[in-house]
Length: 315
Figure: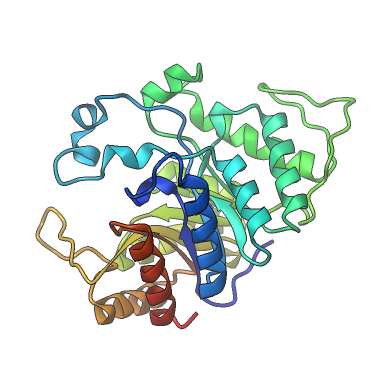
């Protein structure tokens, strides 16, 4: 099991976060951000997962992608496992993770083979971030059952853990009875499993199946509430709360305040002192691990912001 001894930091290298990246320059950008993470002292590099999305995304989901919200092009991401393999080959120290891989779109055996292969080739640096997905249109395109995504995700996770340990798996979505699975991962019993999502179902899944809960954009007070909820669920499940790390992915906007719908400054936006105060509040709230996405207009600005944040966080 994975037990953090202090608050750690990762950086998302998802190419769409920086609009300056073009299809021709994405490989260079990913390699640059991976090397920046390694040089600046970050613990890990992360990639998001998306297959397709509606052309009228902002019209369908105005609360998330409407005017003043997230840029729909932020969903233009490279395939996660392939990209992390590229990052692993371009680095030597940083861990590589998915924030998060949508399991219902993938075949559990092939997915497990891809991930264990990545763990072997990276020297045991994989963090397996898993989630259920949220966009019905994407599920329809992928011929996956949106309503069954929770159950399918749970089975995927159980199959992944069994195959990593050389065990046969028998379930409704696949069976490996009488079959040999290769390779086993370097990390035992399996790479750390982080469960993504802010919903109650995601939190329950993290307690039942995960080494960590991986939330999205929560404030320090929200993180504190989630930590308490996880502690209560752990007692119900007979599991020590220390076995479930509290992790978060959020967006860093350095030197510019971003306001929420109530006019309040969003966490991790603003001056260096405001960012430092936010990090202290996250630490006090019980956050073990923070993965930052960086909102800057150019690749150079993004790399510089990563180094500036590393100094603020004393990496």
